[in-house]
Figure 1 (cartoon, rainbow, N blue to C red):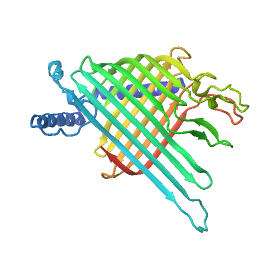
Figure 2 (figure 1 turned 120 degrees about the vertical axis):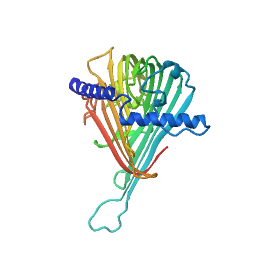
Figure 3 (figure 1 turned 30 degrees about the vertical axis):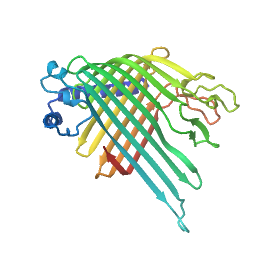
Figure 4 (figure 1 turned 90 degrees about the vertical axis):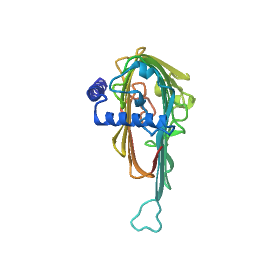
Length: 346
């Protein structure tokens, strides 16, 4: 686990170094500045400002001036991407064999950014749900996610903010492990649920990269279902998601690092990546929790696109159950979803 955390940290450091070298002087940065100038001209004429990146880059200029920055009034920016992929197979008297099925996967990512003078308030919502239905397996959940992040920052220098971060995550519906027979109940709404608050500093060297460093972060894991504590003999001996048997919540306090990339790689190709590293001061701080989410969205036209999402998760407190129902060890968890279907960017 230490090797994984070290590798990810080295990767993030290299990425941050590249971001610092690029700064606001690359072609992409110049394009942002041109957009900002156009927005200012449009505002002066009473017209609507053209859409730009949801990162507050309208306040970034090659020669930073606090007096000019402090005169910037309140502004809201909103935008996101949503998509639905659907596949259906129907067979009737098909000699080669097979089975009919119906699969659906939906995705919504939405950003809201508020800036006013030195204040910056950035919010992100991520929703996903997928299912697959066939005659033999009935309906099974394949994807399920609720994630909300809210960060407030007060600008101290051109690239540094004093920041507060709050996060919440859970899932919509019940989840099962279908690799055992009978299927094993694993999760539902707020079982588990994660809530976190932290204070620290954010470094934004350019318009598309940020690094949040918090030496003081509280994280709570909620367990709102007693059934998840029961072993094969229906005794409350299990520790689902690190929560002690019979309790509803687990408290953690430690350090958190978040690295985010949010930019257009090409005109119709967008990348969002978020890496969170958390070390619990109270219990085994050397075992760093890793949560990495990445979305690559390609727009074919206004209503058709390709989405690829990747999730990597390692949490030392999440113990996998053996086939006999007893608790085993922690593992690296990976999930990826590729979809081609309806997609819109707004």
